[in-house]
Amino acid sequence: QSALTQPASVSGSPGQSITISCTGTSSDVGGYNYVSWYQQHPGKAPKLMIYDVSNRPSGVSNRFSGSKSGNTASLTISGLQAEDEADYYCSSYTSTTILDVFGTGTKVTVL
Amino acid sequence: QVQLQESGPGLVKPSETLSLTCTVSGGSITGYFWSWIRQPPGKGLEWIGFIFDSGSTNYSPSLKSRLTISLDTSKNQFSLKLTSVTAADTAVYYCARRLNWGSYWYLDLWGRGTLVTVSS
Image (cartoon, rainbow over all chains, first blue to last red; front, side):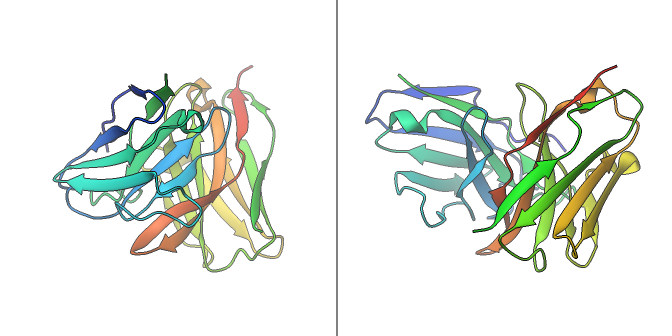
């Protein structure tokens, strides 16, 4: 099972909005609403930010939002802040293997 | 507050067995899926596998022939054993809880991770 495709890097200035894409196939992202997003600061464990495509766990800022269109899921960070600088990984259920599949990861830089 | 902590050797020789334990504190180990994920230095996340409290397991197809994940409910621990390791198994190993959020199961709680280096 190949990893989901994410851009290697995305950057934005404080206050701006950025969007990270996560492209899969009809066997994973496109076929099921079981997409999640994880934030990972350097040297830290990943943190669940979005589940079921667009839901936020309690405690996650509403500046983070998720969506999906076809085989591509997206994570949007609005009102970008310095603390948002981190790596972001998408993940999806896939019908082709037993385990979920992660994305390739995107490094977000706040300029 | 539930916390996870990985423990085990940080250095393993090639061809030997990598063994790690994850201790669950502050809560019960029953009723959840307990998972292992790894991250090679500078690379992305990779699923290793998970175990349910019943003892049923799901393993990565690429690791299945070398992998055992087990559970010790009396100690509130679960473990990973990976045999015949090579340098490609060098990674930060994370244990994590897989919990049902909404419609599916997601990794909502992670350990801090432990770096395991395979080298002679």
